[in-house]
Figure 1 (cartoon, rainbow over the protein chains, first blue to last red):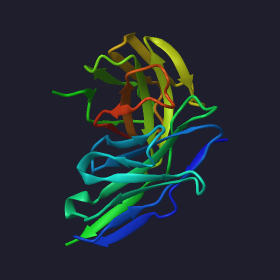
Figure 2: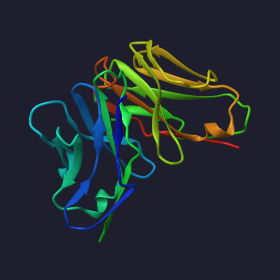
Figure 3: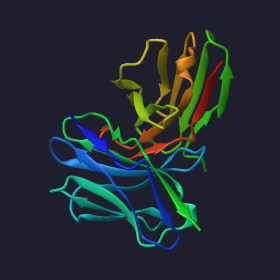
Length: 113
Length: 115
């Protein structure tokens, strides 16, 4: 069965520091991996997607994610965090044998000024 | 321009009532979805329609019935509302017909509170 895990409920980082939000996945076949962000009282916004090719995927708002096949991970990164990046981040996996997108439980990113 | 819109944004109602949530997308997408986000922010798909045809129907009580009058609209009707139905309901849409691989775009959500 396909699954995705976000091991951290919350990540705290100081403004200006690099940030990483972790995601690992399990899928039979080639994975399609997504990151979404949810600001308070808003819908999910698409950040980036990995299909195939370059392991480093660049997305919106300066975010990028690194696909690591051997570690089955797709961590979200940003070189310099902003207070406005504070939000709930969801990793999702698709592809393989499933007909739907499986979302992780979300990681709350808190960026302190 | 609003890409995926939902009405109403907030819905407060009594147990046992019947209510509907409407969703419209102006992206020209072929597939639409309903998701439920519970109080712990866990997101779970409920239904998906491709060009008015039901393609995903998760284990959802049959009190929930989706209706798609055309490919730009997907409404959710809920009968005999229960306390446990309180959640935020999100509509989404995607370009193709492969829910597990196409990028989905979400609406702003409808917060349903059942008293």
